[in-house]
Amino acid sequence: MTDQLSESKPRTRLLQLLVGTFAITYYIFIALLALSALIFNQYIIEWVGLGINPITFNIFPIWLVMLVLFLLNAMIIVGFLNYFRQGKKLIILFFGMILIGIQIMIGGFEGWQKLLLEAILISLIIIIPTRQSSVKDIENAENSE
Image 1 (cartoon, rainbow, N blue to C red):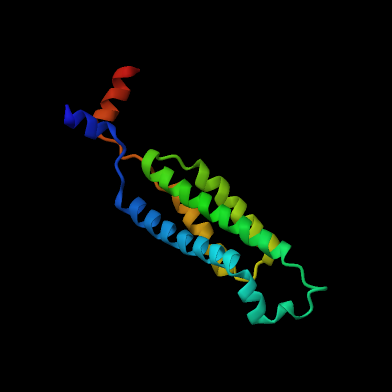
Image 2: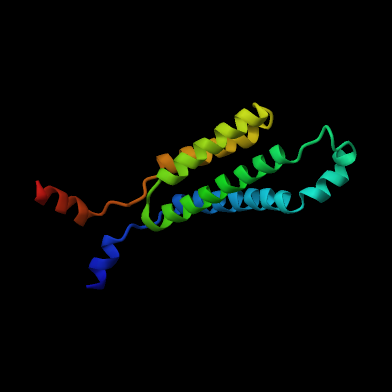
């Protein structure tokens, strides 16, 4: 009985585990950076000296960008956790493409290394299969035809 249950569950491959672990760690650090920028934005503004002339400086657009970046990175982390549990790639692909698009719209292609790294992570998730097919699965597929 336990053999049938263990064979029916999707198995995590080594490459899937390595890419997913690196990606989760990467996106957690980026999300924490965006969250700390949201929390400590007043200190950052004072340190840089942008608050000297408050008439020309508005914090709301910067705060909104940091909030969007934090939420997108958090959704990608949720997507990776969902990917490991159920093998679904849709959340990662959807929010990953939105994140890359927003980063290109905000900053252009400066910092292209970060964009390239995120594109490689997302494309590896597309390429890596989520389930290892076993001999019993192949036999069951042939018998059902």
